[in-house]
Structures are given as structure tokens and as C-alpha cells.
Length: 121
Length: 107
Image (cartoon, chains in turn yellow, blue):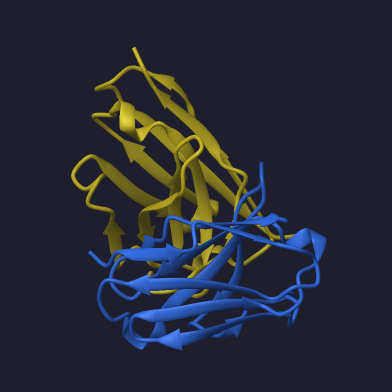
């Protein structure tokens, strides 16, 4: 069974950092691009970042560029999101999502259940 | 950045009826890199359509997508009770952006 399990969310003060992780199983992880998508409480979806199968192509939303860093470890079947200089507007449920194929320019085929990040003093 | 505008914001229909959801882009979406997702309360989104008109694995054929350039449509031919949810379009030809969503509710 294909599964994506996010972890690392929690309550953090503005300006601090947090690292999210996503453990993948049930598919050949290094055959696919991976993404992070977030959803603020009661709001719509916002793509955050995506990374190609070999980390050769990476993209970020303008709202997080320069503050967030996506990475992956294919040997550990894991995806990460390092979030620095967090702001109240970063409060959201963060989903890990599997791409359709190995490149970032593709739809997101399967999503985890998300990890909640709350930025508040 | 390509902005996607979905209409209507809320659509009230009855089971058995046909639903037509619209997604308009602020500029042309390259190679029809347009997807549709369904999200039910408390659940993660589910991919329905990619490449503007290709159904994802396991998606019933009552769901269909069409369009190109700046105008795209998701059609649900005959609504089932489980189809009432929020629907999002997404373009992935120039970075990635989502529309604001259309809520499909039971009339």
C-alpha cells in the first residue's frame, strides 16, 4: 500500500525554525518528484515547494522563497521541509504529496494526511 | 504567477443532476498542465483529472475534464451523494498554483 506519513509539526514562535519530515512507503521513492502543499485553517490549498526525483530541479512558492528549503534522502525514502523565519501566516496543515512522475512539472498524485504547524507567540 | 479563478464559489445541486465547474487562468496554461482535485471535510485532496482531460487511476467515468489555454471545465455527469465536496483546479505548467475552490453542496 502506498503511504505518506508526515511528522514534525507543532507550535512554534514567530521567527523560529521547524523541520518537517515525510516517510514514504509502498512505491519506488526515487522514481517520483515530491511536493509540499499547505492549507491554512478553513482556507484553500497552496503549493509550497517541489523537488524532482534526483533533487536536480527544485521550486518554491514566492511566499516561502528564501525561508524554506526542501530536500530528500532517497536512501531513506524521506522528504523534508526546513522552515526558517516562521511567520503567523505560515500556520497551516502541511501535506506531503507524491508527483505523477519524476519531474516537478506534473500533478500531485497521492497525498499524506498532513502535519499541523502553528506559528504563534 | 498564473492566477486561477474558479466559478461558481458554491454550486447547489441534487443527486442525479449534472455539475459544471469552471477554472479560468490569468494567462495560458502551457501544454494543458491543468489538474482537478476533490477534497472532503477532514480528508486530504484526491487527484481526479490531470493534463486537463485525463482521469486519474480509479476515478469514475462520470468525471470528465476539458479545455485548453485559459478556460477549463470539470463536469460530473450525474451526481452521486459522495461527490458533494470542494473541488480545486491546479496549474503546474508555470510553477504551481491552485484556484480558490468550488464547494459543491446538496440542494
